[in-house]
Image (spheres, rainbow, N blue to C red):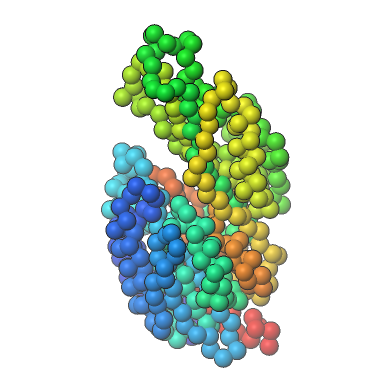
Length: 451
């Protein structure tokens, strides 16, 4: 196929891709504990159906211990051609408060060329970018293809890491495309060259056997909620910089967003300051960040006049690419133990960790991607970092050190992933699918093969 034929094939496939994305995003495939499992299995089944539809001769669900199944597909490489592994995930974040959504989170809604709904961007757009790129070749792929779509990245991605370590031959490839990132802005092509790792844990503070009347006992009885609040606020100084020893600020060599761009994208209110020190690229992509992502305490509407005997919080730590997530958790836990007031009893549970990633300067696959992306977007891509984590990436790097790992996708900075009103721009999805299809073509050319 010529590049022009590939572009036309992707464009012709977009109406079908949009309808399939609507169907897939309508499935509430939240793989967090306490959520129904049936929709997650339904999303796995539809993902398998989609992979079968593009002409891959081998497609199957593969069990992942302690997790939901991954979907694997494969087409052997033509003689002398490399093999490319394509990655995405079919599980999604919980929707959160439905009242914060302008449209129902699991009823994908098209508005002004953008499809709104949980998972429309993260990461079901990644699945459809793979499907649409592969569909352009009508089963005659220019290179070897492997596809792995996992089902619990958002909550326990380390379980697929263990699967890869036990089954390295299944996913071995010369280049790996991870479709779970995006561009800083729509139409502004970028390749993500660094990812922060992640660690998360639940902390519980306990001070009393049971709640006590705040009038009879308040002022002397130790309040577990107050103790936990003191501990959590001590993690940062007044400027918002982390106070935990051993977690220094890092440096990102590329260009990050301006403060004006960041404030607009993040929706920071007028008069509210940003937190932390250093450039925004340093803070977002190369430094540690600690966020309290949940609290188990009485609600305001259900509050009673009582001193609380226990309180819990979920704490997430973002770790620079070179950092050790387990050592980071140990440092944060040790700090919290040290600042705990009043001899409060502490427990730390439900630990999850995921490693970060730092790409090499680039090789033949990156050069092929640059050419493909420049044709699809009209200008060459630039390097950016990402503050989020994709646990599998570093494991793939360790297992296949000779493979080039390329991260790009349709999740632009305004896509509101993990937040209410998540959306994907459909023209951006077309450009990303076109990029991927052109990349597979470019990788088969003599210039990419070194002949």
